[in-house]
Every structure is written in C-alpha cells, then in structure tokens.
Image (cartoon, rainbow, N blue to C red):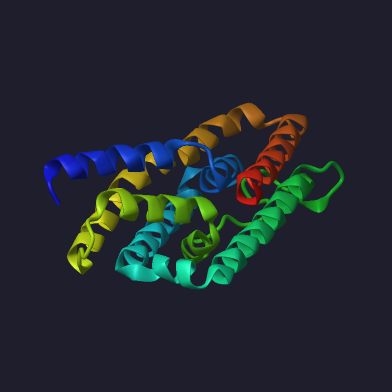
Length: 203
C-alpha cells in the first residue's frame, strides 16, 4: 500500500471514528457513569473488534452480504434490538425513583467490557459501513491478507485515539453532572440520541 493511500485511509478512519454514532454515544455515557479508567476495556474492545471485522471484510466476508442479503438484514435488526436495549437501560438509569438512579454515579450498573464491545461491532451498522467502505475504496482487486491486515492496523491505530476523546470527555463531564437532576437529564438525552442513531439504519 502506497504512502498516499495510507494517508487517505487515515483521514477516512479519523472522520468516520470521531463523528457521533452508537459507539461514541455509549462511550460518552460510560465515561460519565463509570469514569475513564473503567471505560478503557470498552474502548479497547471497540478498536480490536473493529479491526477483526475489517480483516474479515477484507478477506471477502462482505461478499456474503451480496450473495445472501438476508444475513445483512438479520445483523442489522440484531444491532437495532441491542441499541434499543441499551437506550432503555440508560433511560432507566436516569428515571427518578428507580434503584439505578439512587445508586452512586460510579457504581450504577456495570460498564460494557472488552468482549461485549468487540462483539457489538459485528452488529453495529456504522462499523460495517466503515469497514466495507474502506475495503471498497482503498484496497485494490485481488489484494491479499497482508493488505487487509495493514488496512485493519491503520484504521485501528486511528480509531482508538478518536473514540478515546468521547470516553475522556464523558469522564470530565461527570463532575458537572453531580446533581441527580442533571445526571437524569443527561442519561435521558443519551437514551434519546441512541434511539435517533437507529434512524439511518431504517432509512
């Protein structure tokens, strides 16, 4: 892969990774609720899961969607169902009078772990769009495993610092959300944004 192509991949990965989406909204909420350190496994799971997904796409997994479109539809609906579940949990965490809302901010619920975050990438439509877009746009026809590995490595190296901004921002924002009413409003807003992030998947 030429240097010019690598730089183009970096720009593509940075723009795709830093913009709002299910992963970043979940990291922002986790940073607020659990702090940055507890969110690190979530961060690493996203990047490693995305790299494996991109490797698989580069080795031809994306072609399965063309041959069996129903598989793509199934993954999309599984992702939508999971996002709705997460939105419900966030809303419940901020609802007045619930057990979760009465717990301490840093202990309410548990942050998403490494494995869960990695597996989520396989049903995250934005991750698939990024992976397939990068493969289609920057890998030449007949490229082998080495090119797919390099593509995944470059995108992973760019992805991690970009998504870290969201988790760290949430942790910093936590101090401004010490009041129960403010935290309730934040959790409810995050739940609503997660639901809204589903719309592009349905359109």
